[in-house]
Length: 117
Image 1 (cartoon, one colour):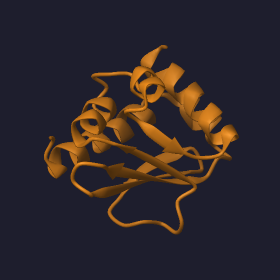
Image 2 (image 1 turned 45 degrees about the vertical axis):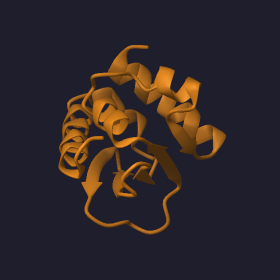
Image 3 (image 1 turned 180 degrees about the horizontal axis):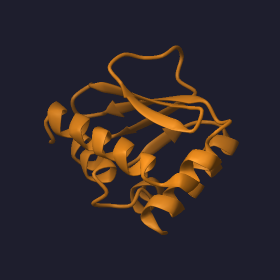
Image 4 (image 1 turned 120 degrees about the vertical axis):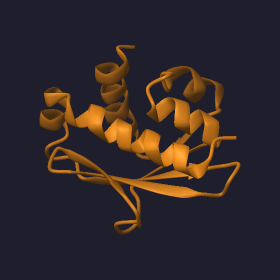
């Protein structure tokens, strides 16, 4: 189990990596979404907001999330820290995503750009 602070730091690092990839800014310019990230083993929730091509880590929700991602805290920490790709945990069901099919496909492209898979 990862500490809440570890998951938060990993999310902050993910936001920095996202900002460093100019193609992501262009690709998400018109894709405004709130993403709730749930830690299954701790019951903690975190929020990310993509707006105008900029990703932010929020301290509180910004409305109703369009997407919900859930997994164990250690998996979330390792995923957002860039230690592991989301592909395998998603395929095995360890990482769950509630979103529209179009949003899931957009996340697949983001995964390709950041993890190269």
